[in-house]
Image 1 (cartoon, rainbow, N blue to C red):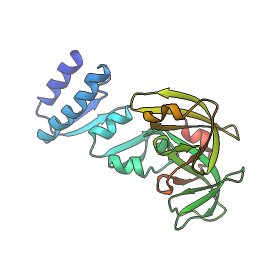
Image 2: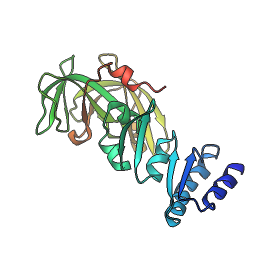
Image 3: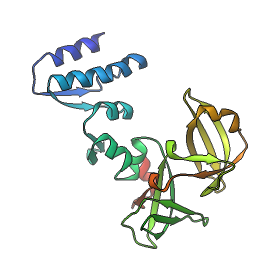
Image 4: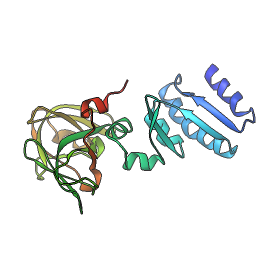
Length: 226
């Protein structure tokens, strides 16, 4: 209640610029989701410029006109929520704003789409890029865009390790042949068709694969969240 009262006072202040530091953090999940849209509508109606600080990526995407992703005091990317989601500037942004799977390898070609050959010899497909053939690169795919199927051919093969029911979706954790763990988020109606221990093919639409230069400090360091 205190947090909601403080928020109401701030909005009623008449200020031209409002700074909100995690204003919905202490609220329960259902109320927080409801207030996201209400707060956005209210700020819009008051024509009040607002800087909203949050570690909740869903909250940022729902409420913002423009999103800035900041790491260790440095702005990595600024754009509309759709731009930051669909066209992340770095692997860190791709993983911070929506969990992603990443695969490393060398570029074979970069147009009309990028082909990446992994150390195990698999050839992966992603969006066009500015990288040159032979360059070390990383291909990132959001888990919601990662598809699995026993019937359809894929770029990779993996074994189902765990299936978690999340209501509308299933979160599926998989182990690839090289020991790398990846995940997929698929519709829950497929629950009976995804069984722990099954081997499955992994694929995605080429337009959903974003290709980045291999970060200088390596992929693991790039993805660390302090």
